[in-house]
Image (cartoon, rainbow, N blue to C red; front, side):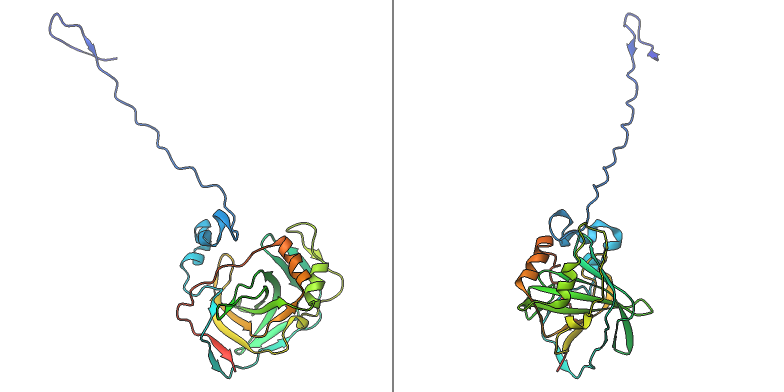
Amino acid sequence: MRVTARPAGEAPVARKPAARPRPETRPEPPHDIHWAYAGEGGPARWGAIKPEFGLCATGQRQSPIDIRGGIAVDLEPVQFDYRPVGFAVLDNGHTVQVNVGPGNFIAVGGRRYELVQFHFHRPSEERIDGRQTDMVAHLVHKDPEGRLAVVAVLLQRGAEQPVIQSVWNNLPLEKNEEARAPGALEIDRLLPVDRGYYTYMGSLTTPPCTEGVLWIVMRQPVALSQEQIDIFARLYPMNARPVQSAAGRLIKQSR
């Protein structure tokens, strides 16, 4: 310790050591938040959970939307080339998803897209003039360049739906464990008789909310039974993203 000289008769005074800088305190990293449909991981927070989810908050062409004021034009029919196919059912923690084998296609806008999987939301994410249906099936297709096209089939309470019943019959006992189903699924039986539709450009409705997705929303709902709705509701009482701003996007509807 260093001592400073003082006039005679005064006791030496010890100099206080210089204060040591306090160690820098860094904020603790936030605990891992998984995206969900409610709570701290709910839709309002999706864009902040991970950098790759940023479009969920900043995107300008997000889905779903409330379909209003569609322009009625002579849209080309969607060419559905669906045939019986093997399938597996997965409860992925957000919905019931059906993974299908190759060989099912749609053709629209000069492109051909292959069906990859379909899954369900309750209630419907899409609204038509403000109205939702009990559920919706989203049939996700991809073309060879990786472009996505999603066919939305609105589902409302009525008679039992055979395709959905085949899916429910093969629900896995554990989440994230795919259950391979025996037999084949006739996916064309999930489509409405009237193939009129709305179409617009949007996004995936779950993170990462990728944009550039072609949406084809069938205008005629398909019936499913109350019992079938109740089975899904036991797993997912609500798994629908709120509607997003249409932001002036063009919506077309077939005549």
